[in-house]
Length: 97
Image 1 (cartoon, rainbow, N blue to C red):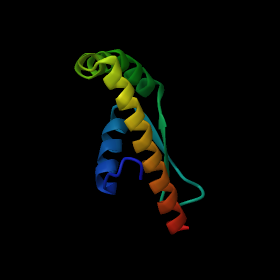
Image 2: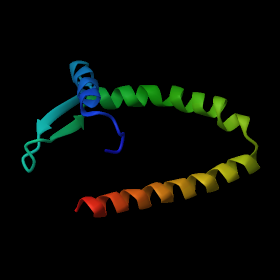
Image 3: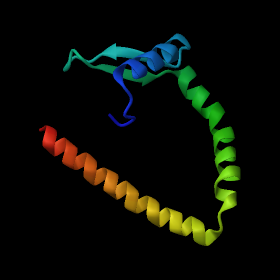
């Protein structure tokens, strides 16, 4: 639900990640339709290896382009948007119960 992908797209992506040894899948014992996906050591290492490059790119392309005042404004707007998303999630969850 959180990434809002179609089930088939998520399954294909997990299949590729599992073949690369990045994740494992285990059955969910409380819901036969579900699975638990766990990050492997290789998956953690891949994230750790990618993180410095990702952070560097985000800083160079995004953070460095904004003034301190613009970054403060962006932070304020982000808080409002995240609160709105959380409220929507709570509403959707309550509606599905």
